[in-house]
Picture 1 (cartoon, rainbow, N blue to C red):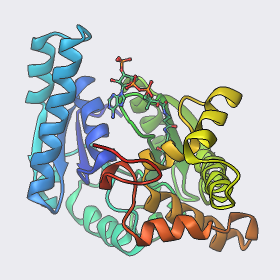
Picture 2: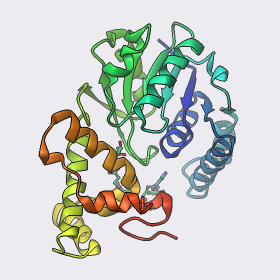
Picture 3: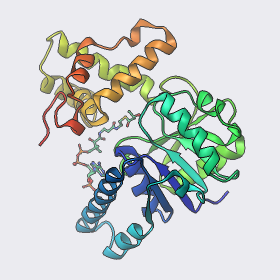
Amino acid sequence: MNFRTIGIVGAGTMGRGIAQVCIQRGFDVALNDVDAKALEKAAAAIEKQLARAVEKGRISAEDQAAAMSRLRLAPSLEDLAEVDLCIEAATENPDLKLDLFRALEGVCSKEAIIASNTSSISLTRIAGVCTLPERVIGMHFFNPVPVMELVELIRALQTSDATFDAVSAFSERLGKSVVSVKDSPGFVVNRMLVPLINEAVFVLAEGLAEAEEIDKAMRLGANHPIGPLALADLVGLDVCLYVLDVLYREFSDSKYRACPLLRKMVDAGRLGRKSGRGFFEYA
Ligand code: 3HC
Protein backbone atom coordinates (compact mmCIF):
# COMPACT_ATOMS: atom_id res chain seq x y z
CA MET A 1 0.00 0.00 0.00
CA ASN A 2 1.35 3.38 -0.99
CA PHE A 3 0.53 6.15 1.47
CA ARG A 4 0.24 9.74 0.26
CA THR A 5 -1.62 11.58 2.98
CA ILE A 6 -0.94 11.04 6.66
CA GLY A 7 -3.29 12.16 9.39
CA ILE A 8 -1.76 12.90 12.78
CA VAL A 9 -3.91 13.30 15.88
CA GLY A 10 -2.27 15.33 18.64
CA ALA A 11 0.01 18.31 18.05
CA GLY A 12 2.17 17.91 21.17
CA THR A 13 5.88 17.14 21.16
CA MET A 14 5.50 13.71 19.51
CA GLY A 15 2.74 14.62 17.04
CA ARG A 16 4.56 17.65 15.74
CA GLY A 17 7.83 15.73 15.48
CA ILE A 18 6.13 12.99 13.45
CA ALA A 19 4.48 15.65 11.26
CA GLN A 20 7.85 17.32 10.61
CA VAL A 21 9.49 14.07 9.53
CA CYS A 22 6.54 13.19 7.25
CA ILE A 23 6.46 16.54 5.41
CA GLN A 24 10.25 16.51 5.05
CA ARG A 25 9.98 13.07 3.43
CA GLY A 26 7.39 14.26 0.89
CA PHE A 27 4.12 13.13 2.50
CA ASP A 28 1.08 15.38 2.81
CA VAL A 29 0.07 15.76 6.46
CA ALA A 30 -3.22 16.73 8.07
CA LEU A 31 -2.36 17.62 11.67
CA ASN A 32 -5.28 17.48 14.07
CA ASP A 33 -5.69 18.65 17.65
CA VAL A 34 -8.70 19.56 19.79
CA ASP A 35 -6.88 22.76 20.77
CA ALA A 36 -6.58 25.25 17.88
CA LYS A 37 -3.83 27.11 19.74
CA ALA A 38 -1.78 23.90 20.02
CA LEU A 39 -2.05 23.50 16.24
CA GLU A 40 -0.75 27.02 15.59
CA LYS A 41 2.05 26.45 18.09
CA ALA A 42 3.00 23.16 16.43
CA ALA A 43 3.12 24.75 12.96
CA ALA A 44 5.34 27.56 14.28
CA ALA A 45 7.64 25.04 16.02
CA ILE A 46 7.99 22.93 12.86
CA GLU A 47 8.73 26.04 10.79
CA LYS A 48 11.40 27.05 13.32
CA GLN A 49 13.03 23.59 13.18
CA LEU A 50 13.11 23.71 9.39
CA ALA A 51 14.52 27.26 9.44
CA ARG A 52 17.31 25.99 11.69
CA ALA A 53 18.04 23.20 9.21
CA VAL A 54 18.28 25.82 6.45
CA GLU A 55 20.69 27.91 8.57
CA LYS A 56 22.86 24.82 9.08
CA GLY A 57 22.86 24.19 5.31
CA ARG A 58 21.10 20.81 5.74
CA ILE A 59 18.17 21.74 3.52
CA SER A 60 17.51 24.57 1.06
CA ALA A 61 14.99 27.37 1.56
CA GLU A 62 13.00 25.75 -1.29
CA ASP A 63 12.92 22.43 0.60
CA GLN A 64 11.66 24.27 3.66
CA ALA A 65 8.89 26.02 1.71
CA ALA A 66 7.91 22.77 -0.06
CA ALA A 67 7.76 20.88 3.25
CA MET A 68 5.64 23.59 4.90
CA SER A 69 3.26 23.58 1.91
CA ARG A 70 2.56 19.89 2.64
CA LEU A 71 1.36 20.66 6.18
CA ARG A 72 -2.36 21.26 6.61
CA LEU A 73 -3.86 22.11 9.99
CA ALA A 74 -6.97 20.05 10.60
CA PRO A 75 -8.96 21.29 13.61
CA SER A 76 -11.73 18.72 13.19
CA LEU A 77 -11.41 14.91 13.13
CA GLU A 78 -13.65 14.92 10.03
CA ASP A 79 -10.76 16.66 8.21
CA LEU A 80 -8.96 13.28 8.33
CA ALA A 81 -11.51 11.52 6.09
CA GLU A 82 -9.11 11.30 3.14
CA VAL A 83 -5.94 10.07 4.87
CA ASP A 84 -4.26 6.76 3.96
CA LEU A 85 -2.65 6.35 7.36
CA CYS A 86 -3.68 7.99 10.61
CA ILE A 87 -1.16 8.17 13.46
CA GLU A 88 -2.69 8.90 16.84
CA ALA A 89 -0.32 10.77 19.17
CA ALA A 90 -2.77 12.17 21.70
CA THR A 91 -2.42 12.34 25.47
CA GLU A 92 -1.48 9.01 27.10
CA ASN A 93 -4.92 8.33 28.58
CA PRO A 94 -6.54 4.95 27.84
CA ASP A 95 -10.19 6.14 27.86
CA LEU A 96 -9.35 9.05 25.60
CA LYS A 97 -7.41 6.83 23.18
CA LEU A 98 -10.15 4.19 23.03
CA ASP A 99 -12.75 6.90 22.31
CA LEU A 100 -10.49 8.40 19.67
CA PHE A 101 -10.06 5.08 17.90
CA ARG A 102 -13.84 4.53 17.89
CA ALA A 103 -14.27 8.01 16.40
CA LEU A 104 -11.44 7.58 13.86
CA GLU A 105 -12.98 4.39 12.55
CA GLY A 106 -16.11 6.38 11.77
CA VAL A 107 -14.11 9.08 9.98
CA CYS A 108 -11.35 7.27 8.06
CA SER A 109 -12.02 5.17 4.97
CA LYS A 110 -12.15 1.37 5.39
CA GLU A 111 -8.83 1.05 3.56
CA ALA A 112 -6.96 3.43 5.89
CA ILE A 113 -4.58 2.08 8.52
CA ILE A 114 -4.85 3.51 12.03
CA ALA A 115 -1.71 3.53 14.17
CA SER A 116 -1.09 4.63 17.73
CA ASN A 117 2.08 6.18 19.10
CA THR A 118 1.14 4.99 22.58
CA SER A 119 4.14 4.35 24.81
CA SER A 120 2.43 1.88 27.13
CA ILE A 121 -1.21 1.11 26.35
CA SER A 122 -1.99 -2.36 24.97
CA LEU A 123 -2.50 -2.29 21.21
CA THR A 124 -4.65 -5.40 21.50
CA ARG A 125 -6.96 -3.48 23.82
CA ILE A 126 -7.09 -0.53 21.40
CA ALA A 127 -7.75 -2.81 18.41
CA GLY A 128 -10.41 -4.58 20.51
CA VAL A 129 -12.73 -1.55 20.38
CA CYS A 130 -12.45 -1.31 16.58
CA THR A 131 -14.67 -2.95 13.99
CA LEU A 132 -11.68 -3.49 11.66
CA PRO A 133 -9.00 -4.42 14.25
CA GLU A 134 -6.67 -5.91 11.65
CA ARG A 135 -5.76 -2.39 10.45
CA VAL A 136 -4.65 -1.23 13.90
CA ILE A 137 -0.95 -1.16 14.81
CA GLY A 138 1.45 0.51 17.25
CA MET A 139 4.00 2.94 15.80
CA HIS A 140 6.13 4.02 18.73
CA PHE A 141 8.43 6.94 17.90
CA PHE A 142 11.13 8.37 20.17
CA ASN A 143 11.75 11.89 21.34
CA PRO A 144 13.07 13.99 19.59
CA VAL A 145 11.38 12.35 16.60
CA PRO A 146 13.42 14.08 13.86
CA VAL A 147 16.65 12.84 15.47
CA MET A 148 15.86 9.39 16.85
CA GLU A 149 16.18 6.61 14.29
CA LEU A 150 13.99 3.93 15.85
CA VAL A 151 10.33 3.13 15.39
CA GLU A 152 8.99 0.20 17.39
CA LEU A 153 6.21 -1.48 15.41
CA ILE A 154 3.82 -3.24 17.75
CA ARG A 155 1.43 -5.85 16.49
CA ALA A 156 -1.84 -6.19 18.30
CA LEU A 157 -3.04 -9.81 18.38
CA GLN A 158 -5.42 -8.75 15.60
CA THR A 159 -2.95 -6.83 13.35
CA SER A 160 -2.75 -8.26 9.82
CA ASP A 161 0.51 -8.94 8.00
CA ALA A 162 -0.60 -6.51 5.28
CA THR A 163 -0.93 -3.71 7.86
CA PHE A 164 2.45 -4.52 9.38
CA ASP A 165 4.22 -4.66 6.00
CA ALA A 166 2.69 -1.37 4.80
CA VAL A 167 3.61 0.50 7.99
CA SER A 168 7.07 -1.04 8.06
CA ALA A 169 7.76 0.13 4.47
CA PHE A 170 6.38 3.57 5.32
CA SER A 171 8.63 3.86 8.43
CA GLU A 172 11.63 3.12 6.25
CA ARG A 173 10.55 5.82 3.81
CA LEU A 174 10.65 8.18 6.79
CA GLY A 175 14.31 7.22 7.20
CA LYS A 176 13.63 5.21 10.35
CA SER A 177 14.78 1.76 11.39
CA VAL A 178 12.11 -0.64 12.53
CA VAL A 179 12.06 -3.13 15.38
CA SER A 180 9.12 -5.52 15.41
CA VAL A 181 7.70 -6.03 18.90
CA LYS A 182 4.94 -8.13 20.40
CA ASP A 183 2.27 -6.32 22.36
CA SER A 184 3.47 -6.20 25.97
CA PRO A 185 3.61 -3.41 28.59
CA GLY A 186 6.36 -0.89 27.77
CA PHE A 187 7.23 -2.83 24.59
CA VAL A 188 11.05 -3.15 24.41
CA VAL A 189 12.59 0.28 24.93
CA ASN A 190 10.41 1.71 27.70
CA ARG A 191 10.42 -1.65 29.53
CA MET A 192 14.16 -1.16 30.06
CA LEU A 193 14.65 2.60 29.84
CA VAL A 194 12.00 3.80 32.28
CA PRO A 195 13.11 1.46 35.14
CA LEU A 196 16.64 2.83 34.58
CA ILE A 197 15.32 6.38 34.98
CA ASN A 198 13.39 5.27 38.08
CA GLU A 199 16.56 3.79 39.58
CA ALA A 200 18.35 7.11 38.99
CA VAL A 201 15.57 8.87 40.92
CA PHE A 202 16.00 6.37 43.80
CA VAL A 203 19.75 7.08 43.77
CA LEU A 204 18.98 10.80 43.98
CA ALA A 205 16.34 10.33 46.69
CA GLU A 206 18.75 8.22 48.77
CA GLY A 207 21.30 11.05 48.58
CA LEU A 208 24.03 8.93 46.97
CA ALA A 209 24.96 11.79 44.66
CA GLU A 210 23.65 15.12 43.33
CA ALA A 211 21.57 15.14 40.13
CA GLU A 212 24.47 16.54 38.04
CA GLU A 213 26.81 13.85 39.38
CA ILE A 214 24.36 11.01 38.69
CA ASP A 215 23.98 12.16 35.09
CA LYS A 216 27.71 12.73 34.69
CA ALA A 217 28.33 9.19 35.95
CA MET A 218 26.08 7.65 33.31
CA ARG A 219 27.36 9.93 30.52
CA LEU A 220 31.01 9.23 31.20
CA GLY A 221 30.76 5.77 32.75
CA ALA A 222 28.25 4.20 30.40
CA ASN A 223 28.57 6.47 27.35
CA HIS A 224 24.92 7.53 27.44
CA PRO A 225 24.35 10.68 25.33
CA ILE A 226 22.58 12.35 28.24
CA GLY A 227 22.13 11.26 31.84
CA PRO A 228 18.94 9.50 33.04
CA LEU A 229 17.64 12.52 34.96
CA ALA A 230 18.10 14.85 31.98
CA LEU A 231 16.40 12.18 29.90
CA ALA A 232 13.49 12.07 32.33
CA ASP A 233 13.20 15.86 31.92
CA LEU A 234 13.20 15.42 28.12
CA VAL A 235 10.59 12.65 28.11
CA GLY A 236 8.43 14.30 30.80
CA LEU A 237 8.29 13.12 34.40
CA ASP A 238 4.54 12.54 34.11
CA VAL A 239 5.12 10.23 31.14
CA CYS A 240 7.85 8.31 33.01
CA LEU A 241 5.56 7.90 36.03
CA TYR A 242 2.67 6.82 33.85
CA VAL A 243 4.76 4.13 32.11
CA LEU A 244 6.07 2.88 35.47
CA ASP A 245 2.58 2.64 36.91
CA VAL A 246 1.46 0.63 33.86
CA LEU A 247 4.45 -1.76 34.20
CA TYR A 248 3.81 -2.13 37.96
CA ARG A 249 0.12 -2.83 37.49
CA GLU A 250 0.30 -5.05 34.40
CA PHE A 251 3.14 -7.28 35.65
CA SER A 252 2.16 -7.09 39.36
CA ASP A 253 5.87 -6.91 40.03
CA SER A 254 7.34 -4.63 42.71
CA LYS A 255 10.52 -4.11 40.68
CA TYR A 256 8.56 -1.49 38.72
CA ARG A 257 7.50 0.47 41.83
CA ALA A 258 7.83 4.18 41.09
CA CYS A 259 10.17 6.11 43.36
CA PRO A 260 8.05 8.30 45.69
CA LEU A 261 10.26 11.28 44.74
CA LEU A 262 9.20 10.89 41.09
CA ARG A 263 5.54 10.99 42.12
CA LYS A 264 6.17 14.03 44.32
CA MET A 265 7.88 15.86 41.45
CA VAL A 266 4.86 15.21 39.22
CA ASP A 267 2.47 16.34 41.98
CA ALA A 268 4.50 19.53 42.25
CA GLY A 269 4.14 20.16 38.51
CA ARG A 270 7.88 19.73 37.95
CA LEU A 271 7.44 17.78 34.74
CA GLY A 272 10.78 18.50 33.09
CA ARG A 273 11.52 20.60 30.03
CA LYS A 274 7.88 21.18 29.15
CA SER A 275 7.16 22.90 32.49
CA GLY A 276 10.53 24.65 32.73
CA ARG A 277 11.65 22.58 35.70
CA GLY A 278 12.21 18.93 36.47
CA PHE A 279 15.43 17.56 37.96
CA PHE A 280 17.08 20.53 36.24
CA GLU A 281 15.89 24.04 35.36
CA TYR A 282 15.28 25.27 31.82
CA ALA A 283 15.14 28.83 30.56
N1 3HC B 1 14.23 18.38 17.21
C1 3HC B 1 15.07 18.30 16.16
N2 3HC B 1 16.41 18.21 16.29
C2 3HC B 1 16.91 18.22 17.54
C3 3HC B 1 16.11 18.31 18.68
C4 3HC B 1 14.71 18.40 18.48
N3 3HC B 1 13.84 18.47 19.50
N4 3HC B 1 16.90 18.29 19.78
C5 3HC B 1 18.17 18.19 19.33
N5 3HC B 1 18.17 18.13 17.99
C6 3HC B 1 19.34 18.01 17.12
C7 3HC B 1 20.15 19.26 17.18
O1 3HC B 1 19.66 20.24 16.28
C8 3HC B 1 21.52 18.76 16.79
O2 3HC B 1 21.58 18.65 15.37
P1 3HC B 1 22.93 18.92 14.57
O3 3HC B 1 23.90 17.87 15.06
O4 3HC B 1 22.50 18.72 13.18
O5 3HC B 1 23.35 20.27 14.91
C9 3HC B 1 21.56 17.34 17.36
O6 3HC B 1 20.19 16.97 17.58
C10 3HC B 1 22.34 17.30 18.65
O7 3HC B 1 21.76 18.23 19.53
P2 3HC B 1 22.52 19.04 20.65
O8 3HC B 1 23.95 19.18 20.25
O9 3HC B 1 21.75 20.27 20.97
O10 3HC B 1 22.36 18.18 21.94
P3 3HC B 1 22.87 16.69 22.23
O11 3HC B 1 24.20 16.43 21.68
O12 3HC B 1 22.58 16.44 23.66
O13 3HC B 1 21.86 15.79 21.40
C11 3HC B 1 19.95 14.42 21.62
C12 3HC B 1 20.47 15.85 21.60
C13 3HC B 1 20.12 13.80 20.24
C14 3HC B 1 18.46 14.52 21.95
C15 3HC B 1 20.73 13.58 22.67
O14 3HC B 1 20.73 14.26 23.87
C16 3HC B 1 20.14 12.22 22.87
O15 3HC B 1 20.31 11.32 22.09
N6 3HC B 1 19.42 12.07 23.99
C17 3HC B 1 18.74 10.81 24.30
C18 3HC B 1 17.39 10.84 23.67
C19 3HC B 1 16.60 9.62 23.98
O16 3HC B 1 17.04 8.66 24.57
N7 3HC B 1 15.33 9.64 23.54
C20 3HC B 1 14.41 8.54 23.79
C21 3HC B 1 13.51 8.93 24.91
S1 3HC B 1 12.36 7.65 25.28
C22 3HC B 1 11.03 7.99 24.34
O17 3HC B 1 10.96 8.97 23.63
C23 3HC B 1 9.89 7.02 24.40
C24 3HC B 1 8.70 7.60 25.09
O18 3HC B 1 7.64 6.68 24.94
C25 3HC B 1 8.91 7.81 26.57
